[in-house]
Length: 104
Image (tube, rainbow, N blue to C red; front, side):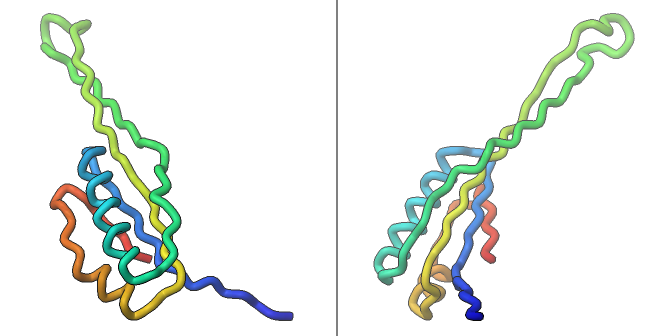
C-alpha cells in the first residue's frame, strides 16, 4: 500500500476590498510563475456579509433604523510542487496593507 502525499503551499487571502485582493492575487501569480511552479487558482470563496442594524434615535423614533454591511472577500491559491525558489519568492512579495495572508 503506497501513500501519496501531495505537498503544496496553500495561500488564503482575505480583504474587505475586492480590488486589493485581485491586485495581490495577480502579484503572487506573476512572482510564482517565474519559478516554474504550477499554480491552481485564484479560487474565489463565498463572500461573507455581516449586516448591522442600528437605531437612529433610541427614544423618539424607534422605527427609524439604519443598516450597515461589511463584505469580506477571500481567495485560495495552491502552488505545486514546493521548491526552495518558490518559498523564497513568496517571502519577498510586498502585498497591500489591506490584505490578510495565511500560508499553510
